[in-house]
Image (cartoon, rainbow, N blue to C red; front, side, top):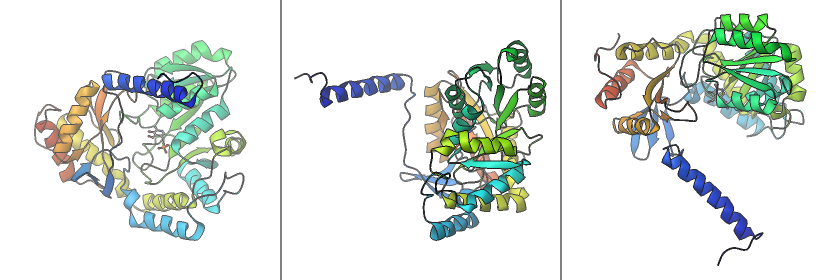
Length: 393
Ligand SMILES: Cc1ncc(COP(=O)(O)O)c(C=O)c1O
């Protein structure tokens, strides 16, 4: 019997039908995402079912998520202060460790102040709408991360996209469109998350300044791995990649940070970061300071890899291997898993249609033999040409 309109059954029916139709569309394009239980068993290895894989798919670039010093700091904070913050920081969740972390991040970025958020995603969707809105202009690199796009959309500002790293197009857009808007904000990344290349920040900042446009740089994949040539007035990032934990931050001038404490909705209306996450990030920052050789490793390993494959020299810990179609990227990723390597396929909408890829992420926890094994596995499965099996020394 057909469910009656207005009953719970009919509402569930149309809801489930909607979900099933959407899933069928995703399946048709090989775009459905699936969760695969995966345990990290060491900084460079994961367990999936009965398989142990070398992981080239973690953003824990310095292997700090499993570092005994980072873990000890988090455990001690949990024992002293409990598991959670208990409330928004503006209510009762403002643990002193968060203030210490902010002072430390500001020092690292050379700004007056910083503000910590629950994640990098929350930082972007809080900061952008707090600074621009209707009547303003956002200029967005076309390869910017989804959370910058979300932040820009939430703001209600007019969004103009410029071609990836195309400074001339950015300048042309500013020249043509800046005049009508009260405020303009340029959004880009220091290291692009799915491409691994760097933004030309000195030139970009100079152009933005000429038009009194503010620049927000998302440094999620740069901190701890690449040495910045210049700092933007708004330096946003995450504690969840090279620092190995969880959380997000913005480093900026004192008045900007003060304003965000009242206006960034993902800060005001969200529970504070647990003290243990702040303690872990502080311990990780200590390690960055005293072990610069650790920070140099991911890029050195990525360069060994690009040299071996005859690719353009890596600019960060991330190296994409372009494949094209999602189906092919999935098949290559599965073939690598059979060789004992975890290299996840990245598909649209994370990357533009037709640019599915294998995204290889190197970590200080890998050794040279891991890199060489990956090169050989890629050649073995035919994912790359085999110009040479010689790997750079
Ligand atoms: C460029 C960029 N920004 C922000 C984020 C989000 O950071 P988080 O994982 O801390 O939410 C990511 C995460 O993948 C990212 O790649």
